[in-house]
Image (tube, protein in one colour):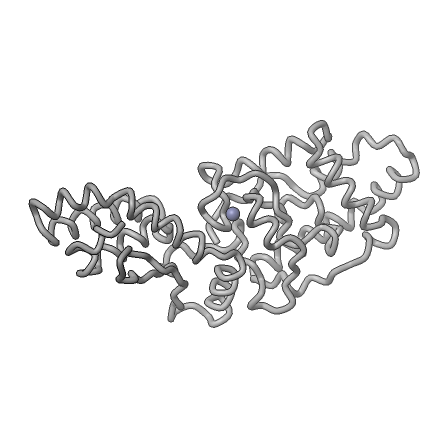
Length: 281
Ligand SMILES: [Zn+2]
């Protein structure tokens, strides 16, 4: 759901590098024979991704009738993701693209692998296409593993093509209780088409981000309790509110929709929290 710069590698160059050292003459001939098809499918993919229409790309068995799905998956597994694969430099470069090495799907855990936006087993022609590969954390990768969108609402936000950072779509509310908690949700943006709001809502739910952010916010609140108590003792609820607002602004300057920015903004707007609600933490 967060943007990443698009990779500078083309599908045809990446595929050519991956198959460059294949010894089996028959396999190499068949793979080289589908190079044009892979280039064409990559162009279709980019056009569809720009229009948020990846659900319109048809699943296939094998590539162009001459390369099997297993063979194509093996090109990715061994020759691109494999440590000594001739396409490994592209794999490594794509993995480094997300800012600060943080997964663009959850914006929290470190990147540890590449995720196929459209799964390689269902779309083998896109197995090594750079636009279809995004650095991700293991959890997000596992959660969406073999997921293929069947409708426009199910298309995952593409970190290279979809930018929703201009709006505050991540929202939260404070739960007042013995221990303060923050519950996260997505906010529908009136100026967005229904489909985009639905995609954001579904992706947030599929990846379990409310649970992830809620747990992180609870830890953050606990870590701030002592400081907020000291501020409250000399400057009261207004002092606490100013401190939380300052922290919210600092985090919003980095990322509007980070769980940190939203946590501080939400807490700063809670009279109950500012006037001592932080104490139970
Ligand atoms: Zn993640």
